[in-house]
Amino acid sequence: FLPQIMEHMKVYLMAPNSEEVLSLKTQAIDTLGIFARSVGKDVFMGMAEECVQLGVSNLETAEDPDLKRCLYGLFAAISSTHPEVLVNVIEPLVQKMFESLDSTEGMTTSYKDSSLLRFDLGESEDEEEEGEEDEDHVLGDYENIEGIVVENSYLEEKTDTLASLAELSIMMGPAFAPFIEESFSYALKMADFSSPPVRKSAMLCLSQTAIALHKLIHKNNYQDESALLPKMLSVSVPHLIEVVKTDKERELVCGALESLNEMLKEIGAEMGGNDAFLDELIEIVKDVLSCSTACQKDEEDDTYSEEVDDESELATVLLDYAASILPTLATAIGGAKFAPYYKMFLPLLLPKNNLCKKNWASGTVAEMIQKTGPAVTPFAETLLNYFLKGMKDSSPDVVSNCVFGIGALAEACGPALAGQYPKFLEVLAPLLKENGDGRTMDNVLGAVARMIKTQPDAVNLSLVLPAFVQWLPLREDMEENVTVYSCLRYLLGAGALNTHLPALVPIFAAELSNRKVGEEGRAELAQIMTAVMTGYPDLMKNFGQDDLAKLQGLLVNNGS
Image 1 (cartoon, rainbow, N blue to C red):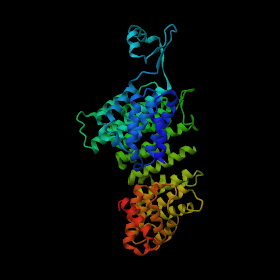
Image 2 (image 1 turned 90 degrees about the horizontal axis):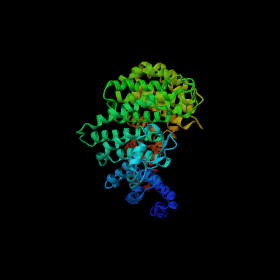
Image 3 (image 1 turned 90 degrees about the vertical axis):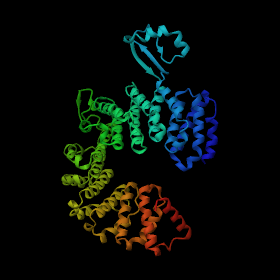
């Protein structure tokens, strides 16, 4: 239906910017952006060039801040699927975005002395020239300035412009290289803006432009001759840490933590330049989890308390963002170096009675184990008791996370926990049942798969596999497909699946075309099906010629 829809939308996209049409035009541009992100790269390919041209023609005459921010968002959305169509327009586009960030339009200064008139910073050039002397006099009277008010639409323009710049810096690759330094400079300038949403977008832009330059250097052989990346990191990282420590806006602190986590994932521990950064990062995570940062302070009695806004969703999200840094840090510095920090963080993570906190805490601890690897073994008993207790919780999310944790712990500790596999299987088995929680059941299969691959001799396959096969395919937690199918591929190679293949082959064939399985999961399936078709041709007799042709196509597309 896209061609038909596009023809209807062009009525608004190509119309002059009258007041009557403007709101419909901005909505149409937003819709194009959603199409770019949602319909798939191949489907959108035929529309991409035309959308760019429509966007460019509208941007040339755009004056309305809502229209401009929507156009920037459209170009960012297009860059996420077809960056190549933006290469020829990226320079004028970025310059327009810089103009939006420079603009003082919509800003009004208010004064304590009512005899002074409010001064519009967005005067025309003629007005500015005519009133230059008065302007110097009025703006120079800083003591009388009470505040600067900015209209919401102009704030939203700056907020979305920074967010779009951030995305373009990542998606456009080498084509954005000439604009990275200036984009970073603009983000740094806006990082102290009066509006929290603008500051949050500025932090995002700071982190994303640094990540973009790091990717160019390491993946595109870009020569950072002026050592720009270390300079960017030496400014952005301390700024983000300072926001976490001192800012009173929880949403901003969440943004700073998210940006630090993303930079740690993409750049690694070297983003801080030295070991002092690691100490600071550990300290701010500990402070947030201890509820002792400025944004967690009770303004009424000037104290810090975990009970402050305990039921607030934003308070819980803040803790979650802080805790999410820990698994990333374990990956960045290595499990052996991270393991000693368990003594510091387990007391802050494990004894959580609040339901929301138990949800994220159990999930975070499980991820930490996965990223730490064998170095977590000294803490295995404490962690195992925590997960076994959590499996009795009334919350399906907590139970599911604890099941995942048991599998991760078994995988990480290897032989050290192999003797406890029968106990694990005993507590996991009752969770596989009709009308059971889908995500929990998927995590049970993932946990069992991890045990089989880690210590196959410690699992009684004759008892375990019939139940394992019975509950395939996975229902909700599609990330576990890679774990489950890599285990089945291992068992197929070991000759342990022969009696179960008649039941499994139809599942494999069906799931191979299921996009929810994920690219890596489908790649595992493709290898399994190729081995089955080669080694067990009789099992393919029930497939018609059309089905076999479709299957061959899927095997080719999924890398087998």
